[in-house]
Amino acid sequence: MQLTLDLDSEVPIYQQIRDRIVEAIARRQAREGDPLPSTRQLAADFGINFHTVNKAYDLLRQQGVIRINRKSGAVVRRDADTGPPETPFVDDWEERMRVLLAEATVHGMDRQDVLRRCEAQLIGFEEGA
Image 1 (tube, rainbow, N blue to C red):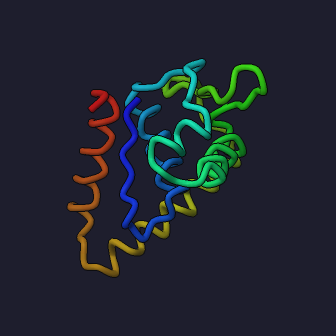
Image 2: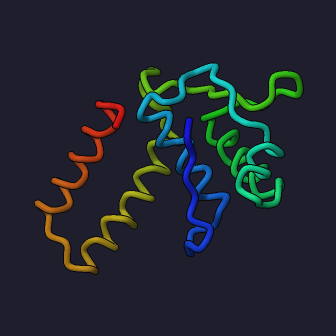
Image 3: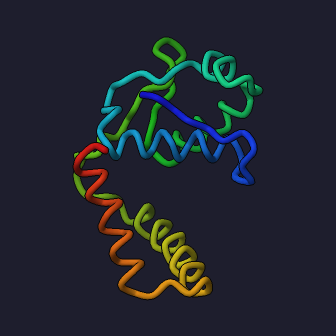
């Protein structure tokens, strides 16, 4: 799994790490049981504080995406092909989606453009792109 971060972005680094890992799982570049780099190794690779990576991993753990074990480290917990999502996840996801759709509307994107872009992203995940 190759992670790319933009250290100059306004998006916090821990959030970028979290997002890139979720995208890798969605694209099936990481599957259930696959190990993730240690917090110290990932921090060294990017030249960032290991607490930043730890924050991303903790967020992923809270969201049920990875599990962290003292012996095996961080591993992917949920495969993209795992069954239907739990209700708390769907509720949270819907709230975040509502905000993204509101932003798209405020910036003048029309319904068809939003739907086309969503469809393209879903196809990308299905194709592992």
